[in-house]
Image (cartoon, rainbow, N blue to C red; front, side, top):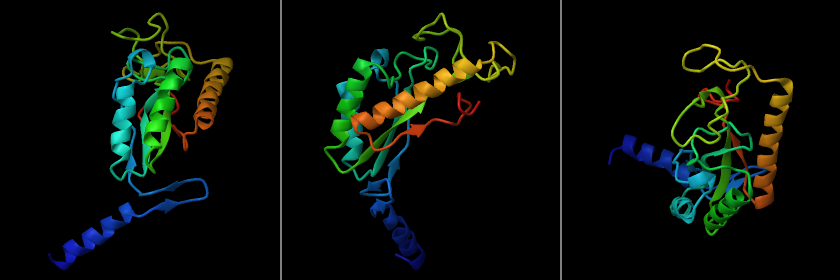
Length: 190
């Protein structure tokens, strides 16, 4: 092994060191990012979802950011196979996920999500198919044409409150934090 290879190995060793801040401590600095999986029928995480996250937690991951979870707004999700973060059945499913991950030292935070105007108007497995997508401008993210009415102030406040309720539920359930999905052309990014 040459000196350059040794340096690369030493540089990577920091990933396996604990991380500490005022609000969060993790056993390693390795973070599993959110990756949409679509294995939650009717928006409810199953025992298989809990097992999936537990397997990752057991292998030196310090923090898991869950796949995107949808807030309680009827047009938030593009698929009923993506998990919700509201309602009794979904929150009970997430509690099982949390408990499975917390059998290790790993921390976990749900990613809270609303796809906004990226939601299709039609589609297989679309929750609330009668509802159009919503967004601050009503402009379709693909065509750049206005295809829906802009959100009203009241609707914006409703969505903000839905994000706040989801964050409060995460705290109440014992999650270690939350991540707001604010990128990739989804509602917060819009």
